[in-house]
Structures are given as C-alpha cells and as structure tokens.
Length: 165
Image 1 (tube, helix red, strand yellow):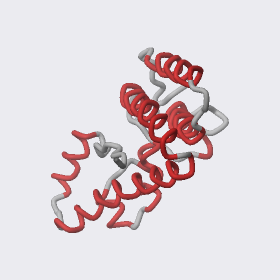
Image 2 (image 1 turned 30 degrees about the vertical axis):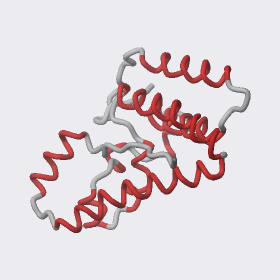
Image 3 (image 1 turned 90 degrees about the vertical axis):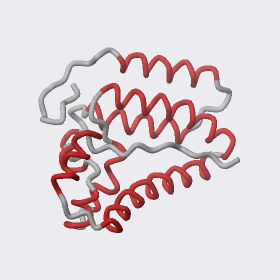
Image 4 (image 1 turned 90 degrees about the horizontal axis):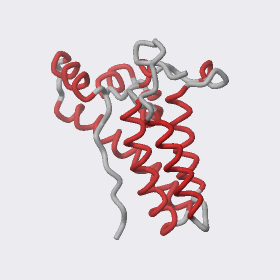
C-alpha cells in the first residue's frame, strides 16, 4: 500500500490501474519493447507504492524531496540523485509516467536504448544541477521564501524532456 508524505496509508484514486492498462497496451502493440523506458516506469512506480519488500531499502520522501537549500547547505547528495524517482501523490506519478511512456517510447525507439539512457541521466542531472546552481547564484538567504515556494510546488521541479531534432 502506498503511503502519503506524512507516512499514513493513502487510498488509490484509481489512476494506477489506468497507468498499468496504458503501459500494457502501448507495449503490446510495439514490435520492439524499449527496456529503459520500462525500467524507469517500474522503478518510479515501485518507489511510489513502496511494497513491503523494498520499503526497508528506500528512504522516505521527506528525506529525499528536491530542496536546493538543503543540498547546498548540508551537501545532501541523496536528495540530488534520488528525488527524480519520488512523487507526492497519485496524479503526480501518473501524469509523469504517462508522459514518460509516450516520450520515452518515441525517444528510445529513435535513439536506441544506450543513448536514451545516457540522455535521461544527463537530463535528470542537469535539471537538478540548474535548480541547485540557480539557488546558489541568486544567494537566496530567505528560507521562508524557499519553504513557501517548495510548499507550493510540493518540492517537485517542473521539467520537460527536450529531444534532439
């Protein structure tokens, strides 16, 4: 059962079965099944659902949500590297995974798995690096502003995949 940010059990809004159905339908119709996209979908969904067999091994969302202030102040690289796999709620997970499903299949099919995996790794690094370096560059000291910003955005940077033309 999935848990909320506070650690309480949360009820499914019924969107996860829709994600599963869409994923199966998309992969069924493809002659070649993109493995990196499938792995990313599975990893993100497992982290969100936190089944009993992975729960002891993965940190709680409060320990890893993207917070540039904590990354810079405490050199908390765990937040830097793990936060892309965490989602605050079911609509957040399903929206991101549906986007990954559609874009990932197209990009991985056209680029190949190894290049797509490399680009995905760079993309995740650069979006977090940019968020962290902007905070450092602006030298924001007002943590009340930062806390308010992160509360509004739920600590999730808004990013988009950009494909090469």
